[in-house]
Structures are given as C-alpha cells and as structure tokens.
Length: 371
Image (cartoon, rainbow, N blue to C red; front, top):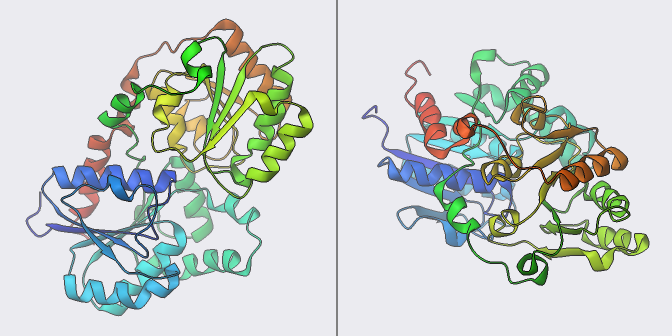
C-alpha cells in the first residue's frame, strides 16, 4: 500500500436504506479493516443505516437540508481535513463533490461511483433538476480521477453518454457479499407465513418507486394465485406504496400480500422464501439479486438494463423475463415454485462481489500514480 494514502473520505447525501448506501457501508468497513483513517461525510446524517457505521469511522455531519447546500461545508471540510482520497456516490452528490474538490484547491484524488444505467434513468426523469443533472455530469465528470461503474453495462452506457476516455471509467462490482449477511439470515421472522412453512413465499425487495415496477410483480402474483396458494412479501418503502396497495385491493389479493416497509434485516426474510423476484424496469447492478444468490435462493428477474443478465450470466444462474410482462413473470415464478428449484452451482462465481475482493479493486485506483 502506498504510504502517501492513509486518509479516505466517503461522501453521501445520507444513509437512506438503498443499495448504494449499503454498498458504501460495506466498502467503508473494509477500508477500516485495512487500517485507513476513514471519514464518512454526510450532507445530512440521517437514515436507517446510521447505526451500522463502524465505531472507528469519523462521521462528519454537514447538516444541510439539500445536497446542493452542502457544497460550502464540503469545500471547507476538504481544505481543513485534507483527505488523500474522496469517494462519492449518487449522481447529484457526485457533482457537488467534484465542484467542492475544485473549489478547495486540494490535490485530493476523487473517485465517483455511478450505480444506475444513465440512459434509462433519463427516460424516467421529469423534473427540471432531474434533467439538469446529466448535463452537469457531462461538464464536471471530466475532472474526476476515476469513475467507477458498478457493472460493465453501466460502464458502456456511461462512456457512450458522457463521451469520456475509456481509461477513466472502471467497472467494479458492488461490495455486496459480507459475512454479516449469513449471520443475519439465520435470525427468525415473527410472522406466521414464515414460521408455519405452509405456503411458498415470493419475495421482492427495494424502494417502492416506479423503476422497481412492483406493480408488474403484483399483477403477476394475481395470476400465480390461480395455480399456487402462495404468499407475496415486498420489503421496502417509497412513494408508490398507496398505488401498490390499491392495485392489490383491486385484484383481490390484499390478504395474501405483506408489505412491512423498510426492514433493517431483509436477509432473514429472504433466506426463508421460496423465490426472489426482481421486477425492475432498469438497474445498475441490483445488489439484492446478488444477495439472494449468495443465500442460495432461486431467482427470477426482468432482463432490464443493466445488471441482471450480467449477474445471471445470460440466465445460467436464474430465470430472465421481459420487462413489464406480468404473464412471463408469473410463468417463470410458477415454474420455480412447482419444480421446487434449488440453487445448484459453484458459488465461486460470486467472488467478484465479495467486500474484500472489491476493496482490492478500489485500492488499485487509489494507488494509481498516473493520476
């Protein structure tokens, strides 16, 4: 390890309950183990993952109501605390991080993570702010040392959209698999569906927003109910909750659907389910799909850009179905449930998602002396 680098800062809007935040926490834990001084700089120190930050980490709360308003404080932090490296995640936060670095006049190396397929994300942006971010990315991403794309699909999409040199964009998978997943998976679930073992359980996990398309999963479930006396569990919270609840009511399946909101430990639910389903319209690298595989759960996923096909190696390790197709989704799930499929593969293929392996990939970027 280069002696020049001993202090690494991570910058995020907050510690909300998403995959990006969970991945950054896993990476932070590995950097702490490796002996780095680690600062976690948050625009606002809120979110359900806050109590999971290792005690060795210095939490810097910028106490800003919006990410953009954290710019002056982040600039001041860089000037006064002088981290060797700043790693940022989530596009609007990345832009603020880049500008802060430029205004600080520090030689801090900056690495930004992109965890979604930008071209697909653009199709779903309606606000002025949402449309402005891609333009700002084109302007400011050229000033970073490296851009980490969380999958090869995201990498190719970024290079095409931003027109930046290929050697500046590195595909590094999320640090998804850590030992605590398996420990948490052993915990019991206090709900009769899970304790009785009477019903096959279909599970989906993610924010309740449009891109996760839980509407299609619920529609598929209504077809599944005609053939299999199954139950559906969706973990997560978001703005689509009411719409999803209304849809379930219209389809007459509310009593067979459980939506407990965000849970700190989704793994105990996942490990006791019959099949994991990803119904997304688009992704970058769906963390929860990898977690499901690591727990040995059969998976069914939409073939959305990008990530699922890459993770499942063209359907070798799970079923792929078209986006927005509830019939195809239902048929694939029914096939898994009726065949009582078990995971039967060499888990070595998941090595690239292990926290220790991913940390080494980041260390290579940090120690790159050419930038």
